[in-house]
Length: 331
Image (cartoon, rainbow, N blue to C red):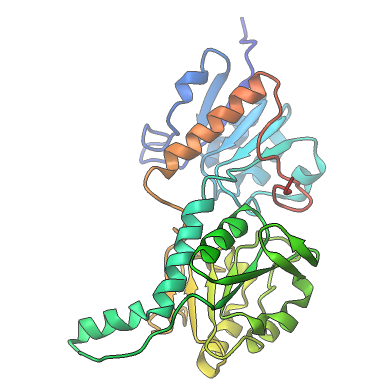
């Protein structure tokens, strides 16, 4: 007799011999008395989607869903183990009745700590100290105080708000850029319209991109914006690489006025070996890891299990994405 349990398909990264224990999320066994669990890799996703009611994208950077969409004959819910969902949204999914949820909340504090660390590291010239240490050079310098500086946070979602909280705690004045301008935001105070970015970006010592990738934010930080920054300004990108014109970024570093860039995300990842961003003393690079603290995978798995229990109990799901906008709207 065929199972009458709902089917949950889990898309996992491929191990050496397909899906193995190291590649599957922890805790799936806790659902097996209430759902049929299928674990598949990208090449088998079409088969795994046939008859499936739910899909968990544990392989969260995979673009395999669009290729296998023709087989999604019963799908009602997709959960993505990432805050950004731009990699997997496509026209057919957006137009469908399938609900999409994401991992909002898991990465907010770790990413905010990364940004705070980047702001302090730049102000205190930790990179310069490390270079001199390697070169055996003793050179006294004066650095800058963080308190009293100004930060512009691009993106008014949960991550941007956590960044604002930590920056304000050390005396940084914060304002933001978002979809609509306003003057009474509870976390940012003033929010400028993103379309007016170039007119306001010069007021910030630190520019932090925390925006999701949408048609409106793709290429948002372009040559016009970068040429309008304050002399010596610091750009921190923990949003998406495609939000920044990387050629214009290099030009702004080479010729001014941009003074430094801390980059965790890039238009192409891994960053190509021939990228002009490598080897620069005015750029600090990290490998898309600003939110990946010890225990993050277990936290992502538990978040999915909690939402799966809600779904099985017919309760409202957490972190429902507005598929047209590409992010979870603030309530």
